[in-house]
Structures are given as structure tokens and as C-alpha cells.
Image (cartoon, rainbow, N blue to C red; front, side, top):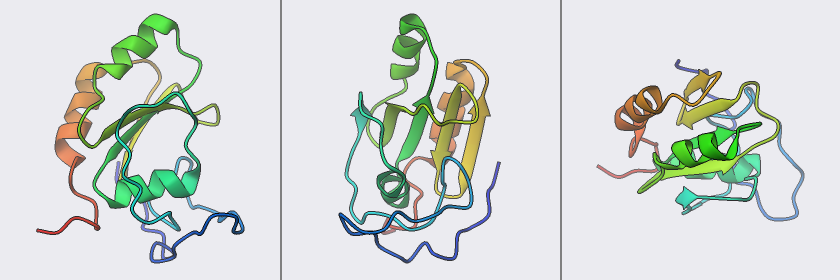
Length: 130
């Protein structure tokens, strides 16, 4: 699903600054940490400015909450170059994939749908040249 573009997307967030607000949860655009070059499987919860910074750079972020260890392992199979898998206890559903201004919500691990989302959106953030 295409989401509304946050007009504050040109705003960079500096460490120790005031926490910005976002139009959606998780955000798909908005104020961000510039140059967030993260990838792969994460065990830490990413703050929203870092999430948006990764999306701006063309990454796809797959976040999850309340999954069994087996489901987390299945979800981790989609991680890789410009695909980040990370926990997030504040999600509106069990699994949410985000890319720049796009979001896919799943009530369970659906690797086929997530792979399709990744294929459609990886490498397509506004911070990508060419």
C-alpha cells in the first residue's frame, strides 16, 4: 500500500535531538538519520529516525512482534542486501514491511508476500542515485 509522503522528509535528525513525530507507524518517510547504512538481521529495536534513514537509502525494513522463535527464523530468511529484519514491539500487526512511502502488513509470517514486497521496493529510496 502506498502511504502519504511526509513533508518533513528533508529534515535530518541529530543524536540527542528532540524526537520527531511521524504520519504512520512504522514510518515510511519523514525526519531521519542521514546515511543509515544497516542491513541484515538485527536483534535491537531500531528507532524511527534510523528506520526512515534506511528507507531513504533504498532498504526494505521487515519488522515483527510477538512471533515464535521458528517464525522469527523463517522471517530472517528474507534478510540480506538492503533488507533489514528487526524486532519492534510497537507494530500495529505481527509483521510489517516498509520501504520508502510503501507498507505491507501481515498478521503472520508470509515469506512469499514479503519476498514480493522486497523485490518491488528494494533499492528504490530517494537517496539512491540512478
